[in-house]
Image (cartoon, rainbow, N blue to C red):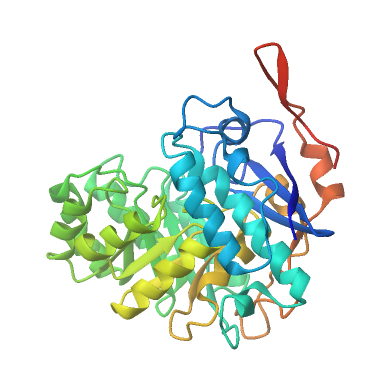
Length: 390
């Protein structure tokens, strides 16, 4: 098979706010090869990512992503790895490359697995896909009462684990944060799994994060996620040495090396990888293998659509003891509508990847159409990109 077409679709809610909610817009990718159609999703700014695919070459190491993808053979996992390796050299000075390629790479795996009539996780080498326990991923409420209500709603919906993050947490006093944490625990109940995401709020201030450790322990938090900037490995390592609570991070890794450095120097208990940022499913699988060999639990990072959710579960589908997964409980309508089907918890409250060809979840052209943003990019008197037909 040869890659015949790569098409991008920029989708958006009518109004996008400054809330820390990545489901307000989306960049969906369609790849056509050998008569097969595959779908992927980039977790990135849509216009910037499209520009990285079509921009004029600046020099030999700053070529558009397109130059390394179109017309390439796509017949095995080795082909996907080869394309990725060529891209790393051809576009090393184009910093949006990993985000742009992530959606393309997902779609390549979807095409390849569909052509073989097998699910992606099986093509990756797993014998089976183990059930995952989803945690309801939500923002902290504007006040503790709202956080309490949201946590209770998640429990009522059948979730045994929740993650509260961002919002006002870490932006005010220690007492205010304590009130939020106690509200989350009260809403979840005494036996549920409570996860906390600080959204990088303390940058590299270890002392500010350490002040929250006693109350985090008091409410029995399983992990503290992203207390620092994504690549502040020294700060992670320093806090890990003082905390009885596991640290979590990794969604900011744009390649395998960044994820490995976090594991080796930041000492997290959990590494969270977003297939829409790290370069796709193949690099994420490498991180999952690396983490498992070092006693670190791998977790997906997904706060958008179920197309992205399915892709992000594939790299660790066959790791039985890496069983927790992020689950977007209340995405915006665009993220919900863009996929043809959803991964719903089963009778045991767990998520199981479908035993179906490809990702098992495809984009829905009809669902996407109401949110489609019409885009044209022109330079030097010619059109580099215009929104393709769905």
